[in-house]
Amino acid sequence: MSYAHITGWGKCIPPARISNDEISQLVDTNDEWITSRTGIKSRRVSHVSTAELATVAAKHAIACAGIDAKDIDLVLLATCTPSTMVANTASLVQKNIGAIGAAAMDTNAACSGFLYAMQAATAQIQAGMIKKAVVIAAERMTWYVNWDRRDSAVLFGDGAGAVVLEAADTPAGLLGTKTGCDSEDRDILHITNFGSDIDKYSPAGPSDLLFEGREIFKRAVKGMSEACDDVLTQANLSLDEIDVLVPHQANLRIIQAIQHRLKVDDEKVMVNIGEYGNTSAATIAIALCEAVEQGLIKPHANIMSAAFGAGLTWAASYIKWGDRVKPIAISDATLPPCEQSGLELVAAAAAACKQ
Ligand code: UT7
Image (cartoon, rainbow, N blue to C red; front, side, top):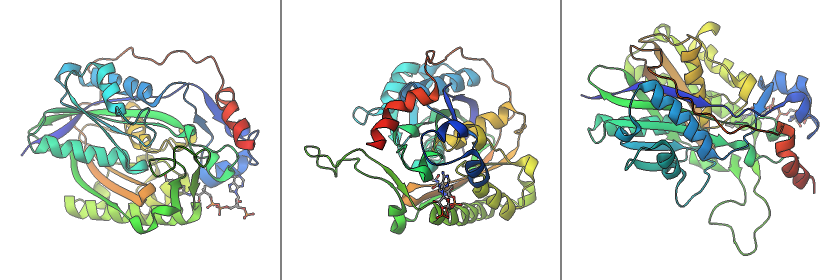
């Protein structure tokens, strides 16, 4: 039996941010409401493409793993905000990182995308089809945001995270996983006017992110908790054996509800939603990376992760960390400098939304 160890991790956080006070200049909201209802204090706005965010995150993960990009067999990019559809965005990332000849594929399971992609890449390694993969989650969610809609505008942000997976003989990496989708309710979270269903010769206006927040909230707690229960049973793991919980960062109250259902102590839960908001597929990839950087993840840690998103997709994973929590090397990859503030970056889109 082969396993897929996580041997590298990296992230790319775009520098421009919008605080709650600043977003209150765009929509009718305030810091007190956003903080108490969501836990979010600020979110990042990217001045570069999804592909560039993904490239920088992947370069950090590859350096961390100490591998040569030429040896990578698969570049798997989870995103619902691809830079380009044809050719896919993963092919540009493959080119940028120098993973010459590697398979390159985008995958979209919205906020569950990273765990879906981890499952797919791990399965290929376990089946002996490939030896090394880089799994990336990168999003520019602010591209979708309607700055006139306060329920969703305050929630989303941009960013990317990545891991390198390598074949190994000892049990670590993704050891338990469950993915699914409640498609009956796919309409309660969706993007309008986007995709080949629209009449491209008389488009119906800009796309818009629509959702029923309360309904999704309830389903997210139930869906993620039940998926975690299934994975714990599958992996024959008890609740007190969980060392770290790395949940999707959609709402602090959702995270706390899951934490309480799983009876996990505060100090074992990775939370960074305050800084970044909901970066869709990228939340878990970034949070996993920061959990290692902050020393929350120790060698051989048992990590539970769960996600929920449009579709309505859901996923839970049990990840066993390997021996190493220190990078083998550090990449100097960075984004180009950003001359504008977060508010300046979204000013044109915000003005268009008001018309
Ligand atoms: O990753 C998957 C996608 N994630 C999600 O879809 C998030 C899931 N849902 C949520 O996180 C929460 O439901 C929200 C944060 C979106 C909303 O929180 P809530 O506690 O469920 O609020 P609500 O929708 O029930 O709205 C309560 C009130 C309403 O006013 P009234 O009708 O009580 O007068 C809203 O109009 O809060 C109002 N409201 C706001 N007020 C200030 C909604 N958004 C805002 C806002 N600022 N940004």
